[in-house]
Amino acid sequence: MSHPIVVTGSQGLLGQCLVRKLAQQSPVIALDRLPADNTLFQNLCVTQVQLDLSDSEAVIRWCRSLPGPVCGLVNNAAIADPYHPGLDTLTLELWNRTLAVNLTAPLLLAQGLSCLMPPGSAIVNIASTRALQSEPNSEGYAASKGGLVALTHALAASLSPTIRVNCVSPGWISDGQLLTESDHRQHWSGRVGKPEDIADVVSFLLGDKTGFVTGQNWVIDGGMSKTMIYQE
Image (cartoon, rainbow, N blue to C red; front, side, top):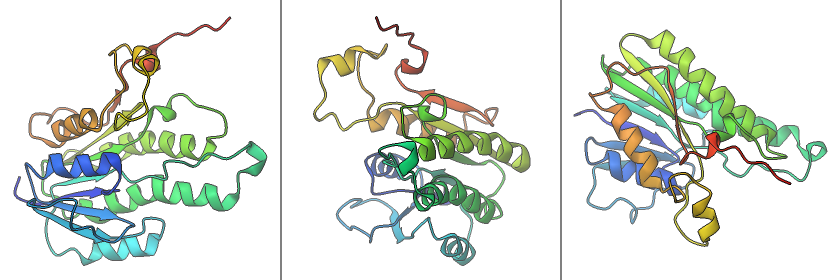
């Protein structure tokens, strides 16, 4: 690939791993709400851009400012800790901001960048197993990620056959710190996931060996969403 790949949420745990992985195959435009950090991606062809994805107008302006083609988009950025003490404490402000970043921004970026993508390009949305199963008091996060899974197959239909659109739903992904043996054992894979597990799949979906794969949600969770647990 000679054209750049756009990756959002580039300074987070998964975002950094995605940028480093994808920069091995293509230039990367790395978006994050934080200012550029020149220590993160040294010696890689990475252009960092500060952009608040909750600001829809700013997202639209940025898309219109890009001068040339892009070959891929990874919608990774998300408000990742949107939990609240109880349903009655979920504010409309938190709900709207969560959906703005996690769901509206991916739509706007797909709208704005798809016209810059040559045939054979691809979009990968990073959802979550929380689109399929929930913990209490996570309504905004679950709704936004469920919406992102649905948005994926809608975009795949609208952008076919020139642009493929797929989704990756990670389970528990960790930097490995503060984990217990019990944390690892509960996974069929025998361990908690690593950022590299997701980055490898995203790289595969953006590549030229998945030309017959579109509209799909890839659940990468070590088997947890298939585990049946009964409590006495």
